[in-house]
Image (cartoon, rainbow over the protein chains, first blue to last red):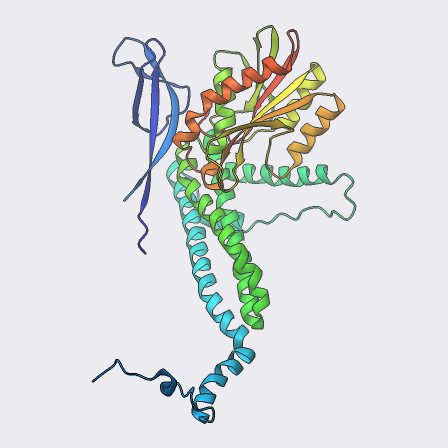
Length: 59
Length: 373
């Protein structure tokens, strides 16, 4: 009755192959590990998906 | 009114042994509990179990609706799939007779694989253009929904039988196992969104470790839904094996090992898998050990152990501890963060246990949903 509601949010971690910068964003449908994802925001390298995980928030 | 000078002895008639009314008040409950104690306990316990069964019924209904919803939205079936899905959910598997255990593993493997093949073909018939990824997802969702249906039916049957017979001892084992059953059922219910979205689950840590080692290496299909990559590491021949991702499958590592061993001489096998943690153990902790680290019904482990024994291959394992909930739901950050450490432990294990020129097979065991190679 008094337990808090738990919400799990999925996140994707992208890693730039060139400068190795990590960027965390919300999971988008179709994301799979190791796939080339987007252009790096700090250099012109491509990023690949390093991790996909869930974080629980209590409400 | 003065409440401070109440005489308890007088109130309960303790000073007067002959008070018949007070004697009745004390003695009546004793008789009540002697003759009706079990029924009272049955009544109290029933309330708790009923709550659990109501929850299980909710999980069963929710998983069924999620499955139907996924099929209707993603597969665009030619006809209404509800009738067919309801029939699938009630499918049962009769395990082979084990009075004579000789050859039982082959029989169990045959029965389980026949069921898998049957389900796969019939899901395909719902939508012939279905992709392999969607097919594997629907198969997993179907497994979850039918498992929840089966759990609900068994628990409800045990409860109703105990109630019908007014038999308190019959309800005791149910009361004892219900918390464990609820934990598993809740874990299955929470796994549904991850499988629908194609996200890696905790059990996918093994394929995640090996999948990264396979990147930029040529891959070949070595057994059904199982891929192999050959590479080199510090003058050792490395065979990397995992289920074919990003589909929701565990592959057939036993069959794959049989093929590999028939063409190559292996000196060691290293298996990386998720393992259920004990209460009190830290989640996502890594442990090393001997023997085949692989779960499931036991047929794959039997096959791997038999091949390793016949060919004198040492089997090492690295496990990443997690709870049942973590193993089948979306991978937690703690588990994902351990992938690099587990990979470096694999390389360390290869260095420590093999010499240059030898061959090692590294198997990433587990469901590979969301984890390609």
